[in-house]
Image 1 (cartoon, rainbow, N blue to C red):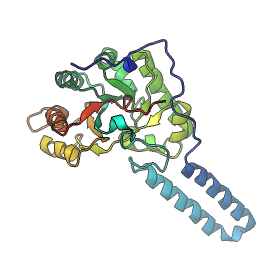
Image 2 (image 1 turned 90 degrees about the horizontal axis):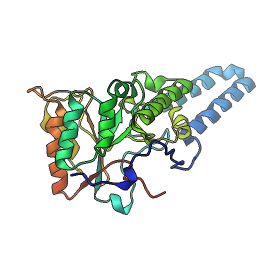
Image 3 (image 1 turned 180 degrees about the horizontal axis):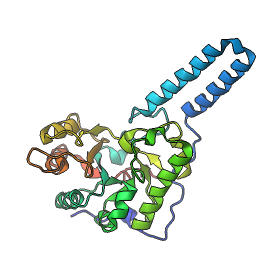
Image 4 (image 1 turned 60 degrees about the vertical axis):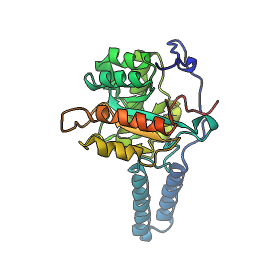
Amino acid sequence: MIESNPALQHNPSHTPARRWPYDGYPAMLKATIVWHVLALAGLLIAPHAWPWWLASIAVNHIIVTAAGLWPRSSLLGANWTRLPTIDRNADAIALTIDDGPDPIVTPKVLDMLDAHGVRATFFCIGAKAQRHPELTREIVARGHAVENHSQFHVHTFSVTAPGALKREVEAAQRTFEELTGERPYFFRAPAGLRNIFLEPVLQKLDLRLAAWTRRGFDTRERDGAVVARRLLEGLAGGDILLLHDGNAAATQEGEPLILAVLPRVIETARRQGLRFVTLREARPPL
């Protein structure tokens, strides 16, 4: 049985205080702004050198785009790729599950987690949660955390303008708060891809970006043993694991990959003396 944790009790009327101090925009965003200002000034002072100023802007855009295409990068802002290094996380790992809720797969995942006494973090898509509100509430009722994985999970998320980014992330915040009574603490970008304007949006909405340490690529791999090996090779305390209950591939026998992989992951982790926590439980004391 999963132990009750008072810190995760749900209070629909509770609006959490700010959990992380506002630390300004990421250095790369500030550098990009300065870079553009200098290039514009250079263009005004030496217009004949416009190819060089244009090239400098292009180089900046290439660097920023590359940083956004690297899901585990912290160049565009703070990013949880591991659990915080505090004593209580030394033997802890986090199981994160993306792209649900799925009406077929998610209930089976919940039953499997119950059977093993494991609590997980579900990064859900707002529109799917609205289609399956009872299932979304069931995730929380069983002691797991529901976090923000955007409202529509669009493939163009990483090239979205600041205003549209805010609307997409904020819509999901409202969705999950209305359905579960809790505001998400964490955000994971679709496919982990983002742009330089996301971090200011997350700060305004009091969200922390979360990536992962290890992923199984279970949306396209059909061999459960391969997925499990990717997750377990070098597994250590502080790791954040990524699997999918939505958009998951199936084994040769037609079973969702996550159901084939979870027992092996859980049993191996426990043999190594590791315990499972949600990302919320892993946060440092405020």
